Length: 254
Image (cartoon, rainbow, N blue to C red):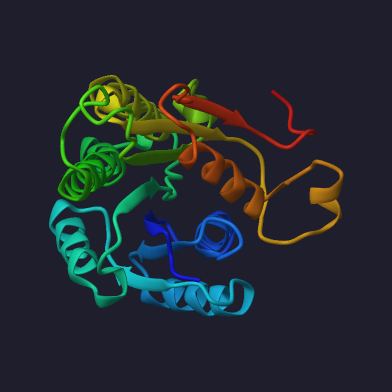
């Protein structure tokens, strides 16, 4: 079965990233050709091997990139010209990278604080801009009224509760997570009328790419369930766009 479109995912970890990628790429689920990005080539190789076993028939290509504007621009250009993606239009772009900087505030330095902001928030900005360029290149820049309601695609940011409230020793973490949430809101308000769906997802609780007892009783989220939720967002029509979503396992306290 030929892929129905192109999806781009940055963040190829062994849990959340792999589960999202499997659902997006699997011919029986999303059936998207998938451009998978991460800074670690070994992580990319392991995830691609996993998907070859667990999503047979999928089209998955990997691209090494960090969140710097130069690296992202080069990766998107490689995606744009890759032979596996020719004739396919971008449908979804997902920013799902880790940000776990925690330290006592009096041990924080301005340089380290701003480095987190640059890599995480700046990375989200650069990724979004490259995704929007490709969406407009593939679908045009007309608004929904001019295209009779044709949706161009979906941009999703994976966040955490840190985007809503912070805790002791989480100064840079909270500031950067909140920054990406506000970026998502701004992009949604600016580009929704053009048919670009933007959603910030607050994912709380442990996420595993295993079907174990903790998943069964609601102590952890199954990574594929995140992927299915993201696919639901991607499939939303312009009459109803979800702009923010809070997901957690049943037994996670909040």
